[in-house]
Amino acid sequence: MSSPTLELRFVGRLILSLVALSAAAWRAEAQQQYYYPAADGSATAYAAPTYSYQTTQPTQYVQQPAAPQYYYQSAYAGMEAAQAAPAQPTYAAAPAAEAAPAQAPAASYGDPYGFTAWLNGIRASYGLGAVGYDPNLANWAAMNNDQQAARGLGHHVMGPARRQNSAMGGFPGIESMWMASPAHRAALLDPTITWIGIAGAGAWWTFNAN
Image (cartoon, rainbow, N blue to C red; front, top):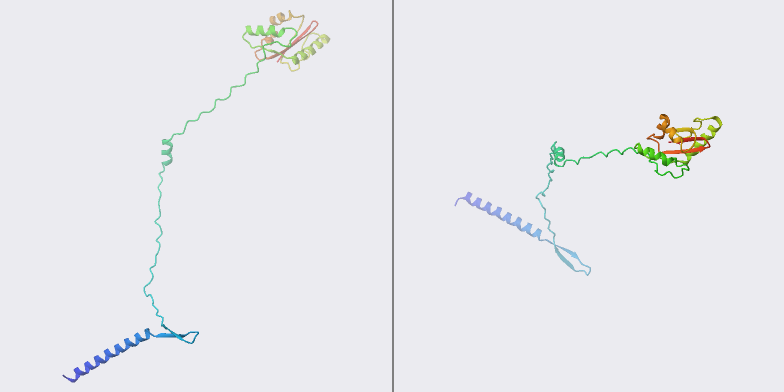
């Protein structure tokens, strides 16, 4: 065997020995124990702490943003809903009928002459409504009679009356004269009057209507 070959083997064994010694030294250092004195003077052996290191990178979680949601609304959606459920028709309330003029009572209560009853009978024959007796209109008629007695036949005091007839005579009798005169008859048969008053003072008579 040649000398170079022997040298190579020697070098190889030397390297292996060094490696073995290094491994043994590292193992001995890893198993080195530490002694800590106790309170009673004895020593307790503790193995040297070993430390491990995590070399792998922690997993990182990245939350991806949620995909945007898109909503499509047809421009005819409202129209389709309206067609699906048609609105109920609304009806305008009928306008209230115009208030009819107050109808006077048919009775001639309070009339001391009975003229109201006679007049309502005449008006009924013409298809007109009855009228009622109003003492206030009768009082104004009496005032006109006072003026007639002082100043002569005429329409001196009207008060609230819209229609007025005057006469000289008595009842019955004056009603026939008024019906024979177109102007006086128009006052008695006025369809818009509802209340009357009449008063006589001797030969002077006044009829008021409203």
